[in-house]
Length: 396
Ligand SMILES: [Zn+2]
Image 1 (cartoon, rainbow, N blue to C red):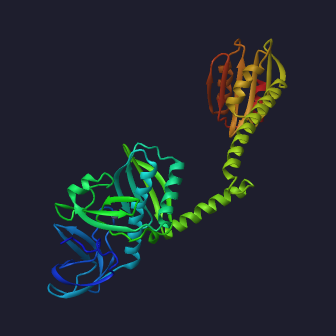
Image 2 (image 1 turned 180 degrees about the vertical axis):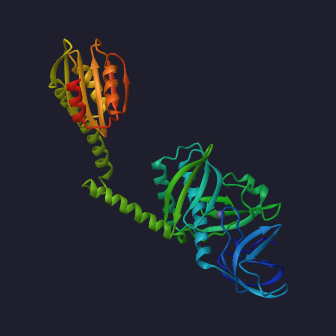
Image 3 (image 1 turned 45 degrees about the horizontal axis):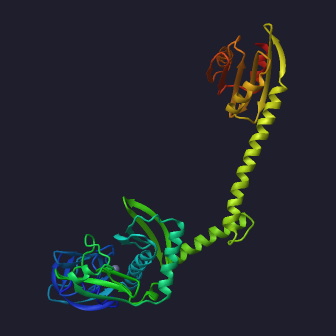
């Protein structure tokens, strides 16, 4: 006898059975329609003999019903089991959706093997063994094919066939490692068929027609391991909610860009392109402005040499540094004081007067840190205002 009658009678939601063993909260029945966790499908929820189920699992060839509390029934009693309809129905739909997804992958993947699957309340994940690069276009096509197969109302059926026969049928997807209940006994394997679409060795519960699955949304992909591609999808309410979130995000983006959904991709690409061009243009203009400001610095006679001293605001120290080297021109020294977060000082020198020494004197006076060589140095984090630094340099 199979472990659980749920896979072969997935529509049953209430049944009578006789208790064959009670060990505190763990109960075994002569037969059960509860699905024990296995093969990626979670355990059923429900009530047994008036007590809520905490877990259902298979162990040593029997289904163990672990109850939320110790029952008052005993061995030999007849009890009623009630399978949580919402949860089981969701699991059947989600589970069958994974078969339909695998069938869709058969259409677009170059090579394909089964790598496992898992159902949670929010999503279903299916792992594929494939060398195909599952890009955005492939995800879109998978979702389209899955929903198309749902709409086409394909019959879903299951049968037990000899293992040898199943092994000879190349179209049957196997994952014997993780699928408990697939092999009903040593000689037979349970094969679930989505008519004309997918064939998989599987011991779970399924709907009998793909139309029952309802809306499916592909959520994304990832790579859980070498040669594996994981595709996640949502089924039913979570698919509907996900769709609404995507729609909202797309409408928000289109509105922000002043366009409609159809043109969104092109307009977004154009916007990114034109922003890059504007950034280049802005950088050129800023460099030009900086060069002009540095060129217009006050000229001071100092120790028989010519110094250019002044301040620039709104520029980064590194930009000012590069520009200062060019802007020194015929002058012996150029000192620029800037103010980005804290005041900074940049010195370009012909080398007779050490740029590093000037920066050292400024940081000795005002704090902060800096460094450099004879021809170029900079200091930052000065503990004063740009004007004070400028005044200091005039008195220097
Ligand atoms: Zn299945």
